[in-house]
Image (cartoon, helix red, strand yellow):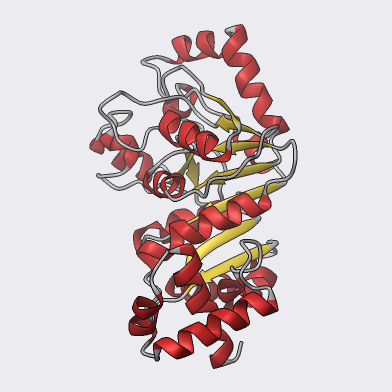
Length: 313
């Protein structure tokens, strides 16, 4: 993309997606206000001021094309970290929400996981009228005091899309394998979990296995138990379940105590949109990619460079 085209896309993104005034856009891009007005007019005339095409700025990176070929996935969006108007911390949720809505088709059933990343995406999801679309929770719920709960993410996204929302009103983790098996066999829960196989699109991130990971914070595992799972080969968390370095579900008591979608069912969803921003999510991301959990990927430029180095080696 030519430099002038990049500036035009950035100006349009900041003005239309973030609601900045023209003088604010001019200050962030270090150009005149008259230039901003000119770029915005060109953006309208060329048709890039459109939700489905405004993400071109993040897809025209050579790195994105190289990663698509290297990882054999359908689409990659790269969020730059040059700090010229585009701050990854604020841009990534907006970009992810835009891409997510663009991927939804009429009558789709979509699955939504949980966590800080998904919560922030839900918080900036554009309003749309997608009646006939169903938004499903991919895993059970957490205790009321916990932030970024699965039901919060699902409900907020369904509300913003004017879609039907289906929550799983069961705990994410049960105290015993027997209780989990019995609850999964209850007709309502069984039907909800089985319905995830009919999803056409999934939205999630991948969790880490650190002492401060979501599973530890919510009390599903103690820090010591998580450390032990790491020694046994755990490398990441998908929809509340532990995966190994190859992206396969761990054969462990924790996973058997989970009320969550079957991971093979998630991998079979045609469009699997994964969003990863934090640097400490690199190893979990590698594991999830090896396991086939992403067909559409949104990452930072530095994360993309690290993936190139890892998968080319």
